[in-house]
Length: 326
Image 1 (cartoon, rainbow, N blue to C red):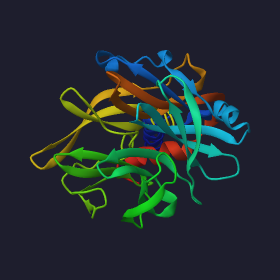
Image 2 (tube, rainbow, N blue to C red):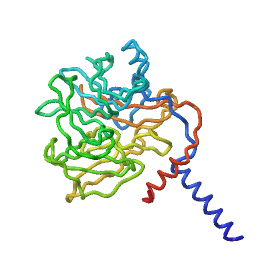
Image 3 (cartoon, rainbow, N blue to C red):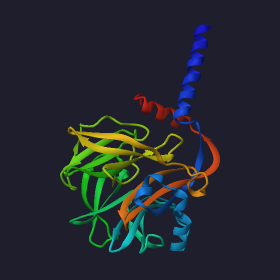
Image 4 (tube, rainbow, N blue to C red):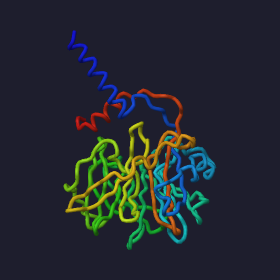
Protein backbone atom coordinates (compact mmCIF):
# COMPACT_ATOMS: atom_id res chain seq x y z
CA UNK A 1 0.00 0.00 0.00
CA UNK A 2 2.85 2.39 0.86
CA UNK A 3 4.46 1.76 -2.52
CA UNK A 4 1.21 2.67 -4.25
CA UNK A 5 0.95 5.87 -2.20
CA UNK A 6 4.55 6.79 -3.00
CA UNK A 7 3.91 6.07 -6.66
CA UNK A 8 0.82 8.29 -6.68
CA UNK A 9 2.73 11.09 -4.93
CA UNK A 10 5.55 10.85 -7.48
CA UNK A 11 3.06 10.96 -10.37
CA UNK A 12 1.39 14.04 -8.88
CA UNK A 13 4.76 15.76 -8.43
CA UNK A 14 5.73 14.95 -12.04
CA UNK A 15 2.39 16.27 -13.33
CA UNK A 16 2.78 19.50 -11.35
CA UNK A 17 6.38 19.89 -12.55
CA UNK A 18 5.46 19.23 -16.17
CA UNK A 19 2.48 21.57 -16.03
CA UNK A 20 4.57 24.34 -14.48
CA UNK A 21 7.04 24.15 -17.37
CA UNK A 22 4.53 23.65 -20.19
CA UNK A 23 0.85 23.80 -19.17
CA UNK A 24 -1.46 21.00 -20.24
CA UNK A 25 -4.22 23.53 -20.95
CA UNK A 26 -3.54 26.50 -23.24
CA UNK A 27 -5.55 28.95 -25.30
CA UNK A 28 -5.94 28.41 -29.02
CA UNK A 29 -4.78 30.89 -31.65
CA UNK A 30 -6.71 33.02 -34.15
CA UNK A 31 -3.61 33.72 -36.19
CA UNK A 32 -0.65 36.07 -36.44
CA UNK A 33 -0.24 39.77 -37.23
CA UNK A 34 2.78 42.03 -37.65
CA UNK A 35 3.69 45.14 -35.68
CA UNK A 36 6.35 47.83 -35.98
CA UNK A 37 7.60 51.07 -34.46
CA UNK A 38 10.52 53.47 -34.14
CA UNK A 39 12.25 53.81 -30.79
CA UNK A 40 15.09 55.95 -29.54
CA UNK A 41 18.35 54.21 -28.73
CA UNK A 42 17.92 54.57 -24.97
CA UNK A 43 14.41 53.06 -25.18
CA UNK A 44 15.34 49.83 -26.94
CA UNK A 45 15.26 47.74 -23.78
CA UNK A 46 12.12 49.43 -22.50
CA UNK A 47 9.96 48.64 -25.49
CA UNK A 48 6.24 49.38 -25.26
CA UNK A 49 4.36 47.31 -27.83
CA UNK A 50 1.17 49.33 -27.37
CA UNK A 51 2.95 52.34 -28.91
CA UNK A 52 3.44 50.51 -32.21
CA UNK A 53 1.36 50.02 -35.33
CA UNK A 54 -0.18 46.73 -36.44
CA UNK A 55 -0.74 45.15 -39.85
CA UNK A 56 -3.13 42.20 -39.90
CA UNK A 57 -4.12 39.72 -42.58
CA UNK A 58 -7.36 41.68 -43.05
CA UNK A 59 -5.30 44.69 -44.13
CA UNK A 60 -3.42 42.51 -46.60
CA UNK A 61 -6.75 41.31 -47.96
CA UNK A 62 -7.88 44.93 -48.28
CA UNK A 63 -4.71 45.73 -50.23
CA UNK A 64 -5.25 42.66 -52.43
CA UNK A 65 -9.01 43.14 -52.70
CA UNK A 66 -9.51 39.48 -51.79
CA UNK A 67 -9.79 37.30 -48.71
CA UNK A 68 -7.04 34.76 -49.33
CA UNK A 69 -4.68 35.71 -46.47
CA UNK A 70 -5.22 33.79 -43.22
CA UNK A 71 -2.35 35.30 -41.22
CA UNK A 72 0.96 37.10 -41.65
CA UNK A 73 4.11 36.57 -39.59
CA UNK A 74 7.95 36.50 -39.48
CA UNK A 75 8.63 40.11 -40.54
CA UNK A 76 12.12 41.01 -41.76
CA UNK A 77 12.97 44.35 -43.30
CA UNK A 78 15.73 46.13 -45.14
CA UNK A 79 16.24 49.83 -45.83
CA UNK A 80 17.13 50.67 -49.42
CA UNK A 81 17.05 54.00 -51.27
CA UNK A 82 15.33 55.70 -48.32
CA UNK A 83 12.52 53.15 -48.30
CA UNK A 84 11.77 50.35 -45.89
CA UNK A 85 10.93 47.01 -47.48
CA UNK A 86 9.11 44.74 -45.06
CA UNK A 87 9.08 41.07 -46.04
CA UNK A 88 6.48 38.83 -44.40
CA UNK A 89 5.28 35.26 -44.40
CA UNK A 90 1.76 35.27 -45.83
CA UNK A 91 -0.22 32.12 -45.15
CA UNK A 92 -2.98 31.96 -47.72
CA UNK A 93 -6.01 29.71 -48.01
CA UNK A 94 -5.61 26.27 -49.56
CA UNK A 95 -1.91 26.72 -50.29
CA UNK A 96 1.56 26.90 -48.77
CA UNK A 97 2.78 30.08 -47.14
CA UNK A 98 4.59 32.52 -49.42
CA UNK A 99 6.66 35.69 -49.02
CA UNK A 100 5.06 39.10 -49.67
CA UNK A 101 6.58 42.56 -49.39
CA UNK A 102 5.27 45.84 -47.96
CA UNK A 103 6.92 49.16 -48.81
CA UNK A 104 7.14 52.43 -46.87
CA UNK A 105 8.77 55.79 -47.54
CA UNK A 106 8.63 56.89 -43.90
CA UNK A 107 8.44 53.72 -41.82
CA UNK A 108 4.90 54.61 -40.76
CA UNK A 109 2.61 54.12 -43.74
CA UNK A 110 3.05 50.89 -45.69
CA UNK A 111 1.74 49.97 -49.11
CA UNK A 112 1.34 46.44 -50.35
CA UNK A 113 4.16 45.67 -52.77
CA UNK A 114 2.87 42.28 -53.85
CA UNK A 115 4.26 38.79 -54.04
CA UNK A 116 8.02 38.53 -53.54
CA UNK A 117 8.66 34.78 -53.49
CA UNK A 118 6.53 31.67 -53.85
CA UNK A 119 7.49 28.01 -54.04
CA UNK A 120 5.70 24.68 -54.29
CA UNK A 121 6.57 24.10 -50.61
CA UNK A 122 6.00 26.07 -47.41
CA UNK A 123 8.33 29.05 -47.17
CA UNK A 124 8.62 31.51 -44.28
CA UNK A 125 11.13 33.48 -42.17
CA UNK A 126 12.26 35.77 -45.06
CA UNK A 127 15.64 36.79 -43.68
CA UNK A 128 16.70 39.38 -46.24
CA UNK A 129 20.09 41.11 -46.24
CA UNK A 130 22.54 42.91 -48.49
CA UNK A 131 26.29 42.67 -48.97
CA UNK A 132 28.71 44.04 -51.54
CA UNK A 133 27.41 41.60 -54.16
CA UNK A 134 23.72 42.42 -53.82
CA UNK A 135 20.52 41.28 -52.12
CA UNK A 136 20.15 37.85 -50.55
CA UNK A 137 17.53 35.96 -48.60
CA UNK A 138 17.81 32.89 -46.37
CA UNK A 139 14.23 31.88 -45.57
CA UNK A 140 13.01 28.76 -43.83
CA UNK A 141 12.76 26.09 -46.52
CA UNK A 142 12.51 23.03 -44.29
CA UNK A 143 10.00 21.30 -46.54
CA UNK A 144 12.49 21.35 -49.41
CA UNK A 145 14.86 19.32 -47.20
CA UNK A 146 17.57 21.92 -47.72
CA UNK A 147 18.76 25.29 -46.45
CA UNK A 148 18.54 27.50 -49.53
CA UNK A 149 20.12 30.83 -50.42
CA UNK A 150 18.15 33.17 -52.70
CA UNK A 151 19.40 36.11 -54.75
CA UNK A 152 17.78 38.80 -56.88
CA UNK A 153 18.85 41.26 -59.56
CA UNK A 154 15.47 43.01 -59.39
CA UNK A 155 14.96 43.86 -55.73
CA UNK A 156 12.49 43.33 -54.07
CA UNK A 157 11.15 40.81 -56.62
CA UNK A 158 12.29 37.89 -58.77
CA UNK A 159 14.11 35.89 -56.11
CA UNK A 160 15.93 32.84 -57.46
CA UNK A 161 17.81 30.03 -55.74
CA UNK A 162 21.48 30.96 -55.74
CA UNK A 163 22.86 27.99 -53.86
CA UNK A 164 22.07 25.16 -51.46
CA UNK A 165 23.89 25.96 -48.23
CA UNK A 166 23.13 22.75 -46.32
CA UNK A 167 21.70 19.67 -48.03
CA UNK A 168 19.34 16.94 -46.88
CA UNK A 169 18.23 18.56 -43.63
CA UNK A 170 14.93 19.81 -42.20
CA UNK A 171 16.04 22.88 -40.28
CA UNK A 172 13.82 25.63 -38.92
CA UNK A 173 14.50 29.37 -39.02
CA UNK A 174 18.19 29.36 -40.08
CA UNK A 175 19.65 32.63 -38.83
CA UNK A 176 22.81 34.29 -40.08
CA UNK A 177 25.29 35.83 -37.62
CA UNK A 178 28.64 37.53 -38.32
CA UNK A 179 31.36 37.08 -35.69
CA UNK A 180 35.01 38.05 -36.13
CA UNK A 181 35.07 37.91 -39.94
CA UNK A 182 33.24 34.59 -40.12
CA UNK A 183 29.66 33.69 -40.94
CA UNK A 184 27.58 31.50 -38.65
CA UNK A 185 24.19 29.88 -39.17
CA UNK A 186 22.11 29.10 -36.08
CA UNK A 187 19.21 26.70 -36.60
CA UNK A 188 17.19 23.89 -34.99
CA UNK A 189 15.69 20.58 -36.05
CA UNK A 190 12.19 19.29 -35.29
CA UNK A 191 13.33 18.11 -31.84
CA UNK A 192 14.58 21.63 -31.06
CA UNK A 193 18.27 20.75 -31.01
CA UNK A 194 20.36 23.85 -31.74
CA UNK A 195 22.98 23.52 -34.48
CA UNK A 196 25.60 26.10 -35.42
CA UNK A 197 27.44 26.08 -38.74
CA UNK A 198 30.32 28.29 -39.82
CA UNK A 199 31.80 29.49 -43.11
CA UNK A 200 34.13 32.17 -44.43
CA UNK A 201 31.54 33.29 -46.97
CA UNK A 202 27.81 33.13 -47.53
CA UNK A 203 27.91 30.47 -50.24
CA UNK A 204 29.99 28.17 -48.09
CA UNK A 205 31.13 25.54 -47.67
CA UNK A 206 29.34 25.39 -44.31
CA UNK A 207 30.86 23.30 -41.54
CA UNK A 208 29.11 22.13 -38.37
CA UNK A 209 30.66 23.75 -35.32
CA UNK A 210 31.65 21.77 -32.26
CA UNK A 211 32.78 24.66 -30.08
CA UNK A 212 29.50 25.51 -28.36
CA UNK A 213 27.51 24.22 -25.43
CA UNK A 214 24.59 22.00 -26.35
CA UNK A 215 21.25 23.80 -26.28
CA UNK A 216 17.86 22.24 -26.91
CA UNK A 217 14.21 22.62 -26.04
CA UNK A 218 12.71 25.89 -24.91
CA UNK A 219 14.56 28.98 -26.20
CA UNK A 220 16.67 26.96 -28.63
CA UNK A 221 14.76 28.06 -31.75
CA UNK A 222 15.71 31.39 -33.30
CA UNK A 223 13.26 34.29 -33.40
CA UNK A 224 14.81 36.74 -35.85
CA UNK A 225 17.90 38.62 -36.97
CA UNK A 226 20.87 39.33 -34.71
CA UNK A 227 21.54 42.94 -33.79
CA UNK A 228 24.21 45.01 -32.11
CA UNK A 229 23.48 47.24 -29.15
CA UNK A 230 26.24 49.09 -27.35
CA UNK A 231 29.02 46.56 -26.83
CA UNK A 232 27.04 43.33 -27.32
CA UNK A 233 25.60 41.22 -30.11
CA UNK A 234 22.10 39.93 -29.40
CA UNK A 235 20.12 37.01 -30.77
CA UNK A 236 16.39 36.55 -30.17
CA UNK A 237 15.15 33.07 -29.23
CA UNK A 238 11.59 31.75 -29.06
CA UNK A 239 10.01 31.01 -25.71
CA UNK A 240 7.23 28.41 -25.87
CA UNK A 241 6.58 27.80 -22.18
CA UNK A 242 2.87 28.70 -22.41
CA UNK A 243 2.43 27.30 -25.91
CA UNK A 244 4.01 27.93 -29.30
CA UNK A 245 4.76 31.62 -29.71
CA UNK A 246 4.71 32.63 -26.04
CA UNK A 247 7.45 35.23 -26.34
CA UNK A 248 11.01 36.14 -27.27
CA UNK A 249 14.05 36.20 -24.99
CA UNK A 250 17.31 37.93 -25.87
CA UNK A 251 20.71 36.25 -25.61
CA UNK A 252 24.12 37.80 -26.12
CA UNK A 253 26.37 35.82 -28.44
CA UNK A 254 30.16 36.00 -28.36
CA UNK A 255 33.25 34.13 -29.49
CA UNK A 256 35.68 33.74 -26.60
CA UNK A 257 38.64 31.37 -26.44
CA UNK A 258 37.41 29.89 -29.71
CA UNK A 259 34.08 28.97 -28.10
CA UNK A 260 30.67 30.30 -29.12
CA UNK A 261 28.91 31.44 -25.97
CA UNK A 262 25.26 32.31 -25.43
CA UNK A 263 24.09 34.17 -22.34
CA UNK A 264 20.51 35.12 -21.55
CA UNK A 265 20.31 38.90 -21.14
CA UNK A 266 16.57 39.65 -21.22
CA UNK A 267 13.88 37.12 -20.35
CA UNK A 268 10.70 37.59 -22.39
CA UNK A 269 11.69 40.81 -24.12
CA UNK A 270 8.50 40.15 -26.08
CA UNK A 271 5.59 38.48 -24.31
CA UNK A 272 1.78 38.25 -24.48
CA UNK A 273 0.26 41.72 -24.60
CA UNK A 274 -3.05 41.20 -22.80
CA UNK A 275 -4.36 44.68 -23.66
CA UNK A 276 -3.75 44.24 -27.40
CA UNK A 277 -6.17 41.82 -29.03
CA UNK A 278 -3.83 40.99 -31.91
CA UNK A 279 -0.96 40.04 -29.57
CA UNK A 280 -2.74 38.78 -26.46
CA UNK A 281 -1.73 35.12 -26.86
CA UNK A 282 1.98 35.67 -27.45
CA UNK A 283 4.78 36.84 -29.75
CA UNK A 284 7.57 34.95 -31.50
CA UNK A 285 9.63 37.12 -33.86
CA UNK A 286 11.82 40.24 -33.80
CA UNK A 287 13.88 42.28 -36.25
CA UNK A 288 15.86 45.24 -34.88
CA UNK A 289 18.02 47.56 -36.99
CA UNK A 290 19.45 51.01 -36.56
CA UNK A 291 17.94 53.43 -39.12
CA UNK A 292 16.93 57.08 -39.29
CA UNK A 293 18.89 57.93 -36.14
CA UNK A 294 17.10 55.39 -33.96
CA UNK A 295 15.85 51.82 -34.14
CA UNK A 296 13.11 50.52 -36.38
CA UNK A 297 11.67 47.38 -34.82
CA UNK A 298 9.25 44.90 -36.30
CA UNK A 299 7.72 41.88 -34.59
CA UNK A 300 4.73 39.59 -34.73
CA UNK A 301 2.13 38.25 -32.33
CA UNK A 302 -0.89 36.01 -32.22
CA UNK A 303 -4.46 36.54 -31.14
CA UNK A 304 -6.13 34.34 -28.52
CA UNK A 305 -9.36 32.56 -29.39
CA UNK A 306 -10.38 32.12 -25.70
CA UNK A 307 -11.03 28.42 -26.17
CA UNK A 308 -8.91 26.29 -23.88
CA UNK A 309 -7.20 23.27 -25.45
CA UNK A 310 -5.87 20.18 -23.68
CA UNK A 311 -2.54 19.25 -25.24
CA UNK A 312 -0.91 16.58 -23.11
CA UNK A 313 1.35 15.38 -25.94
CA UNK A 314 2.99 18.80 -26.25
CA UNK A 315 3.50 19.09 -22.49
CA UNK A 316 5.13 15.68 -22.19
CA UNK A 317 7.22 16.08 -25.35
CA UNK A 318 8.75 19.44 -24.45
CA UNK A 319 9.47 18.40 -20.88
CA UNK A 320 11.23 15.28 -22.13
CA UNK A 321 13.20 17.38 -24.63
CA UNK A 322 14.35 19.71 -21.87
CA UNK A 323 15.35 16.71 -19.75
CA UNK A 324 17.29 15.18 -22.63
CA UNK A 325 15.00 12.15 -22.77
CA UNK A 326 13.37 12.70 -26.15
